[in-house]
Length: 212
Image (cartoon, rainbow, N blue to C red; front, side):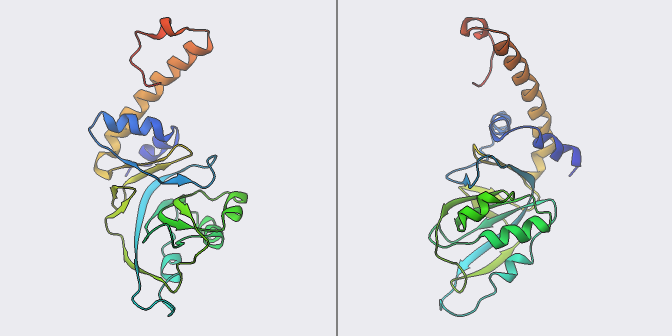
């Protein structure tokens, strides 16, 4: 995937990406997955990982090291967790991921160490915080497969745009054309914003086809 395509997605927020996907009939918005720190943003190609519960909780599993070995530079780590009641991610993982130049993590499951994550700069998005560790309760079952994040299928190399508004997934095969549409919408939004900043009223804008 051309780095210019990823660069285009970096210039906009998740709302513009969602608007662009609408023009292709693609619903890529992951539901109920939010930012731990809404000021942070993650954009990049997905590297996917899926957890499963173990049959004998309490015994050592391949988690966390099978997870930590999958930290990939310039990727957004997308994790299909078992549920919000078990943590798949925390503060120490965030520090290690940042050192590995990972773009961010999106967890359809639980996470913990919220104060540590918020005091850092690594972007974390997830379903809900929980103190309960997933270690000795979860195992990494699959890496690189298609997973479910907030009701959206995510495959390796799909583009993820995550920010304080939400998480949007762009299929890899559509990324280039969606990026072109994103650039067009960004230009249109800039024009509308300039009009509003110049004092335009609602009546002045009524002829504009624009998402407010």
